[in-house]
Length: 162
Image (cartoon, rainbow, N blue to C red):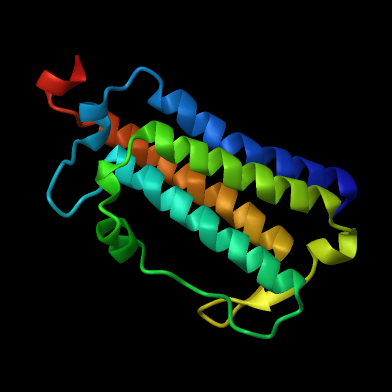
């Protein structure tokens, strides 16, 4: 990748939560907390999961940059969401945390050399992943959950939709 491509990757990384924020604009707390079924996630829980994932990505980036040979951690997303009672957060609280983590990581990413962008670690399934791969994968992951948020909003019952 070129320096311009790294800059574009950082820009996409920074923009993902702005897209989510735009999608949440005007939604009520009840709409954001609604679940289609007991085992499904609400919009708030999706957002909490993305903040959790941001925390994990933050750790993984720093673990790779440290030169550690430790396998990069996975996390049990459902247990994390349930364990913290994620639906009790407000979207505002979660967005503040998300933006702070993204800004912190983006500042780090902006300082990386081309060589550092290509440093790698071993993920939880044993595959080699570079920092560039990890950030691009995170952006795709958020895009997947953005589509999930849209599906949840589309499924809102009439009494909540208006």
